[in-house]
Length: 236
Length: 95
Image (tube, rainbow over all chains, first blue to last red; front, top):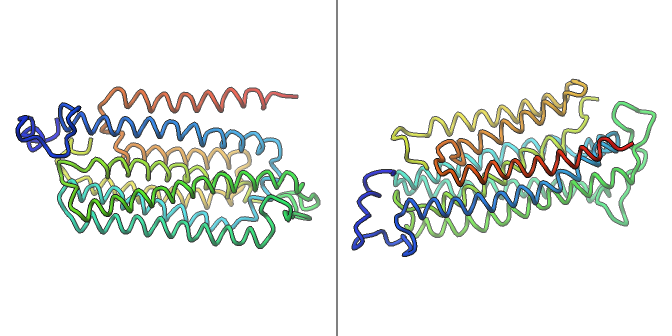
């Protein structure tokens, strides 16, 4: 049982306005919400898991070509985006802590910062995508990856068909991740409006926690995408 | 999940933040050093540690007390393991 304010809500006459009638107590309601979110995140892990598996299989088969293709992406942009997402995860926990301790401006400021970090991430991603489009590294009719040496084998060129598989995986995985970021920005817009209206109190801020779980999960996916897509065989 | 300790969790949050940034920096730098087969091992180990500390401290798994929630997390990891391990056992042993 958390703290005395929540215990005090047990009298049926004065229960918390956010407590839905089919829950016995706020604690149970919050646990149910977080349980549901974790189940959803479990399905998300399997969703991305299939892509990670496809990546692993092709990386094993065409390692040299994947290394050449991966080295054509600016690793610095990927690293910067990793740092941006980590900062956004920090501001998410600060927003929740602000709600828990009734610090309204910290909560709202952190939510705004989180969204700015999210937009920065998408902006950097956009720069990266534009370079790939300019270089004709986007799978499709205009794809071209000719005469690119395989890392460590300057006399061998990467097979463009195999490099195309890398770029297909790169665009699907980072694109799907970016889509999750856009959904996250939508969720955080809603959270910001709710926070602005004063809906979150130290007793009730479940939507912040649930939205935060989603945001952190998207961060975790990126933590794996960064080394897998950007840093293959860089040392040669 | 969050109000188990009365002390401020801010110190934890900022430590985790620093650790994640350091992990990113080490991942980036290590990728340019020739470690042979261990380049991928190092990168994935750091990524897994980072994912773990995000889940434990930012997603508050460390304070999670519901058994059902733990079941979901363990089942998720287990099924991801099945997906990748069994598929790779096939693909990696084809001749």
